[in-house]
Image 1: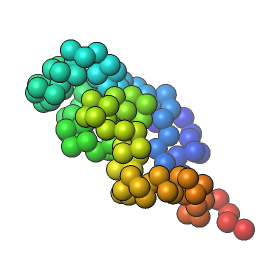
Image 2 (image 1 turned 90 degrees about the horizontal axis):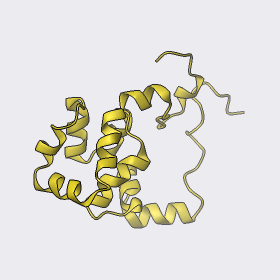
Image 3 (image 1 turned 180 degrees about the vertical axis):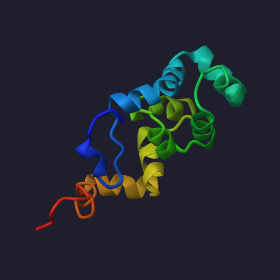
Length: 130
């Protein structure tokens, strides 16, 4: 990372900034390619072959194959681009978000309707809790 980034110590949060954007450029471009029906069909026919057409890292390709969205985010993916993978799989954004939290869709929906996660434990690591 090129600059001092005091925002990197929020537990459980991956900040999508310029450095992460550069890291995930090809991953995100792959995701955007899924907006075209012919590319979705090619991807679904042979995921590995389609991924190998993109100059992504092996870790990025494996995260896509595993549908490990948290790993994709850590490797530079942007959730709005990654949503194209879910759409290609016929999954809702709610399904994807729930999968990233380890909750069922119903549990995730109920949590969000109730106001979202508690702030407890979600502050900056160095922040005073008084």
